[in-house]
Length: 285
Image: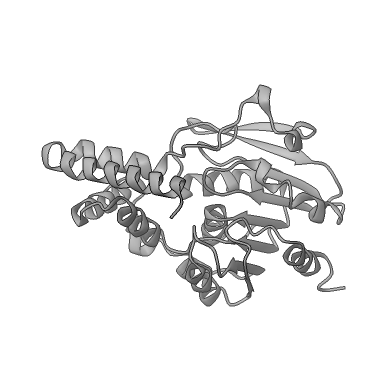
C-alpha cells in the first residue's frame, strides 16, 4: 500500500469511528453526516470562468428543474444526436478522449453535468434526480443514442426503465454499478461503520425516494429495456467491480456484454471505442 492509499485508509477509518461514536450520542446527526459523505461529491465542480478547454467552444444551455438547474454542452453536427452522461466526482470534460471517436460520425453531441457536478446546482448527488435531468434533456434534444459512464450509466438504465418510449434507440453503458445496496455496503465497509448505520441509511433512502435499496437494481431495471446496447466493464476496475457489469448484462437481453482488461475504471481505449463506433454507426449497413 503506497503512502497516499495509506493516508486515505486511515482517514476513512477515523471518520467511520467518529460516526460510530456519534451514533450513540446523536443518532440523527450520525445518519445526516454519513448520508452526506455518501452523496456529496468532493470534486467535480467547475466554474464558468474556468471551463476546461474541451468545453469552451460549445453551445451551452442551463435548464431549470424544480429548485435545481443543470448544465449542458453541445458540439454541433448533423441530425443524429448523442447524449453523454458522466459519473461520480466528474463532469462533462471527462468525455474529452471519447469525443474524437463519436465526432467521426458527424453527430451532434450533448454532454450533461450531473447534480452537484460541473456547473449544475446542488450539493447532493442521487440517481433519481440525475434520471430526471436526463429525461428533461432527452425531451429537449431528442437524442437517438445515450452513453453513460459509471454511476451515470446506472442513471441511464434507470431513466430507460422509467421512460422506455423516448427518442433513444441505442444505449452504451461503461463501468456502471448495478445495485445501490452494493455501493452502500462498500461504503460502510470502507468506513467500518456498524450495521445499525446501514439500516438507518436504508431508512433515509426509503423516506427520501420511496424505494428500498434491494429494489434499486440495474439488473432488475435492465430486464425491462427493449432497445439495443452495449455493457462494457473492465476486469481490473477497482471502483466498480466487474461483477456489477455482469449483473446488468444478465438482465438486459438485447445488451451485448464486452469484457476489457487493464483499462481500470476510466474505460478509455481505442479498440473499445472503435467497437462502439461500429455498433452505433455501421452495424446495420
